[in-house]
Image (cartoon, rainbow, N blue to C red; front, side, top):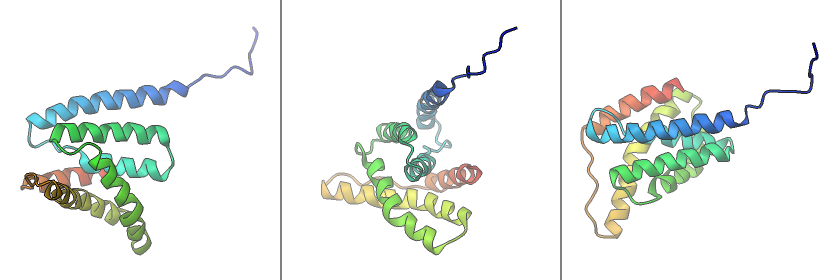
Length: 156
């Protein structure tokens, strides 16, 4: 029997296929979250994954999570690119300060979830106020979304 010591399995396309699967699954989930109000839009989770891929300099994951953030924007009626701009600003200015002052990773994740919803609402209110449009709604569902997404981010 002949052995080929220089042959290896190529798994270069495994990450591309798994990320493509996650984009399709998130597209289906996004449609379901608009029908059922108890399902969160995963804004904080996608923002956290965007931040993590930004700090790891992983361009491929950054593009995938940017697409998912754009799907959230299209679903919820936000401005195009507003969540990407918001999470880029948060990851450049707010999170380095939090990481310097706090050592508790779980506390930083909890503050990230709260900041994702409250500060994004303030950010969208300012943008809509500049263009004299209706203000975005913030209701009690947001607190349920924060609790669910904090549990998911804490597991990561």
